[in-house]
Structure formats: C-alpha cells, structure tokens
Image (cartoon, rainbow, N blue to C red; front, top):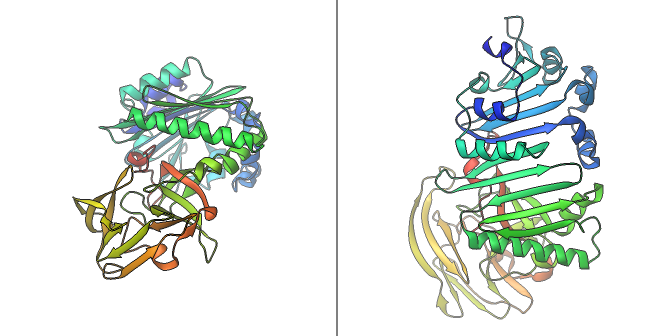
Length: 414
C-alpha cells in the first residue's frame, strides 16, 4: 500500500497530508500525557484498558506520539508512532485481517502500517491527501513550533468559523477560542473570570493558577500548576458539561449537544432570556430551559403568545424548520437582552391559557420548542435555589450515529 512507505508523520506533514475536510488536528506525546495525574486517572477508567493489557501493549513503551486528523463528513485518521504493530492495534480494536497480509478492518476503520508506526483511519482518510484548510494548517504549525501537546479545531460554520487552539506543556494549559462576535468573547471571558473569583472565595482548591481574559475576539484561558484536584474543582464549582437529552430546546439546542454550563454564584446570576440548568421540582432530575420571567413579573400565555406584565414578547417570522425531527414554524423572539429562535410544531400547549404571578426568588421557564416541552407550564415557577448553572456555549455536538456536528462546535448559546 502507498501509505506503508510514507515518511513518519510530523506536525507539518500531518496537517499538509490530512483530508481536505479536516476540522481538527492534534498531536500528543504519550509519555508526557501519562505523567499527568488526571490523564492517568482517565485512562484507568477506560473500558478498553483490559483489552490493551491483554494485547501485550504498554502505552509508554509502544506509543511515542499520537497524531489525529478529524473532519467532515465523518473522517478520522489516527497515527500511532512508535513500536506498536498493526497486529496489536487490531487485537485492541477486535479487528480482522483484510486479506492482503498487512492491513486489518475493525468496524468502519482500517488499520495499516506506516513508516514509524500504525495508522487507524476511516477509508476516506487512509491515504495521504491534499491537506487541511490553510488557516487551520497555519495555526497548527505555529503552535507546534512552541508546544509539545496541541489541539487545533475549526468549529462553527465555514462562513463564521470558531477557531479553537489548546496547547499544554509540563506546567500550563492554554486555550484560545476566537468567536465571531468580539462582544460575545469579552462577555464570556468576564463571566468565566467572575465564576473563578467566586469559586476561590468559596474555598475551591486547585484553581489559583486559572485565569480567563479576552483579546480582540478571542477568549483566552490559561491554567498554570494544575494538579489532580484542578479539573474536579473546575467541574464542580466553575464550569461543567451538560448533554442535551431531548428536543425541548430546539431549534437552538438539539439532542447530542454537549453544553458548557457556568456553575456557582456566577451560574445563578440569571436574567430573563438566559438558558439555565435546574433541578426539577418534582423528580430532582437536571433539566434545561429558558428563563422567560423573573420574580415579581406576571406571565400570561395564550395561543402561543407570551405576555409579560401585559406586554406581548416581540416576535418576528424566521422561516420554517426542515429538521425531520423538529419540523415546524420558526419565530425569532426577544426577551430582555436576548434574541433567540423558538419553534412551533403544532398541538401541544398552543391552545392552553396560563396566567401566573412569579413569586420573588423564582423564575418561570419555557422550552424553545414551545409545543414539545415539559416546563413551568407543567410544574410552575422554579426557585432560584434549584438553578444549578447558566448555559453559555456548545462545547461539542454529535448526531445519532456519533458523527461530530462540526458547525455546532464552539457555538455560543442564543
């Protein structure tokens, strides 16, 4: 095979031989990663760990560098550089021989030898191609000249990309996300900075070296001196991921979205129009809805129209949803400082009449998919004490088959 005699992949050759649809490039030094307590703990939790050991693979001995290129439509290339063999990789992935004596097949992946290691890839990414998009290549190569571990992503749409760059060394991790709107970037950095400050005041350990700033349109986060407790403290008191389990917040948030949620005191600083995570007042399960009214306001809902204090929320036609899982009429609604799309699919609550005064210290919550949402129309206003966080961005998104929805990566929440 042509790739069997390809030169060992490096940061530059990885980027310049990746498939044209590449949206993410990564390069990791395995020994350095395994030296991190948090990474070691994550590896111990992997269900494949037993298979790795049974296949006589010792990661720090057999794999020196991992190179990754991933992109559209559903392409993946993983190069394992070191002494590991295709037979060992096939053993881990339960692969079977392809018949040529050199390669293996494991589900939708192909396993083949390359000079200096083994390549695991989808069929369209197995051979060297014309390279990733030039802006992604440039960012990746510039970072590779200074960092031993790096991940570069082009999220968002092609027209309005969200470039994300993460680099880390022995003592620091740097993340930079460039949002299409500089005002959004500044606001996001400020909110994260307040959340960090509040967590420190509350006694959170391990986050003294975490800083968030903005420059131009970029949100920059730097972590220095991280230890095993840093990730735990960040997840429990500053920011946490939440997976969208249903279509109740369509069209803006969809099933398979993994969302960043600000926690702690900053996460409870909610205003009308914000999207929040809260504990359901009856089941205690975590739910996500939009704040449509706050304490002291009167809410009246009739025929799909929402009135706050007797005044109808501003609506503008936004076309029609062609999503087969959530078809219907789209409307752009404005509440407070927020403007966002909502969906009417027909039926549901459209004919119900609700008139309620929101008590002090409570919020009234609605799903953006107005006819398909279990919200305050069922269970009434929710105490602010039950609100656990405020949703700020889509960190990642996967469709039903597990493919990455690249256009949603890094997308701010409306």
